[in-house]
Length: 417
Image (tube, rainbow, N blue to C red):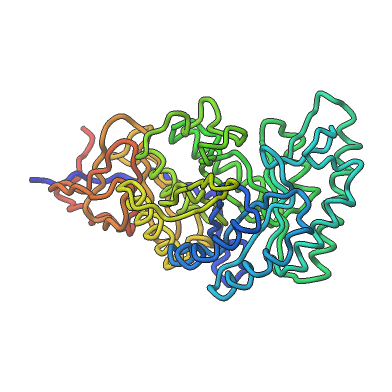
């Protein structure tokens, strides 16, 4: 039987990797912990830090239950010391708010209103830095263009960010400032990107995308196009997965891949996103984590890596993804989309991240990847192999060690008549 010939039409470069040593935050894998932690919760979190590090994470992002972070510095410092002892960095949200939001235009408690209360944010940033924290996270920036006078508010916001950056610079060059902003208002977003100089500025490129290979590729390419000329690291967030018992937290965006998504799709997106160069924020709840709330005397929050079948599968997948990401240096790799492959359909995303070929199937039918690509990882659990190659089912993502097609025997060349 004649093996199908693989025709490669286009390899489109979208990001050129660094290939050399770089600051930790440019390539880090960050575990986004759900909930808000009080003093007792922070103490209970101590024992969860070694398992999180074992999964392959470089840092954790957590939120404190009290808006005034200056009141819990002792408890936080204890946690940070334990984390550092496990080679794990700690980032802390500086704003306590229902949606983890920080806003420039309006003073709606408990949000921090930057125009009049910039000193509060700077004081809290300073308090966090004194605990030895590795990153200060501002949260979701909420822009309101309908209020007008955007230029003035933008200047005030940038001035506050610069004050925070100055606090970081005085202490440690490896401590970072991060935030999140939506692309729904492009002018505001690009101002944050070009004027505010966060080390990480997360956006909705992945978690706001429909379940479409073409949409995802377009959003990824735009992210690198915006950031690479500025020297910014891409900071990917594929999921808004949150603690379901807290209705105040943001849920999936209407029309996005995550809306009513089956577990298989969530696993595929974690696998897909982890292959992208840059930093990545993965929710604890997509990596086998679970949340338990005790109602004894007062609510207490406890996290654990669950033992239910889905939890165990997610934990195993996250561990494999993160360790292979580190082994192949995907955080600082070059990325290119591969188009025109005879075995892929128009709802298949194929890209090369360093030596790894990543195949995401957003279509409704399975595809077969030729045998000369060696399977490395599969979000669906067990890969099926046939005489033609490796089957990648719908709602799944697979990693391969990219191979080269065999030379075609000249006897099989066709000639035009």
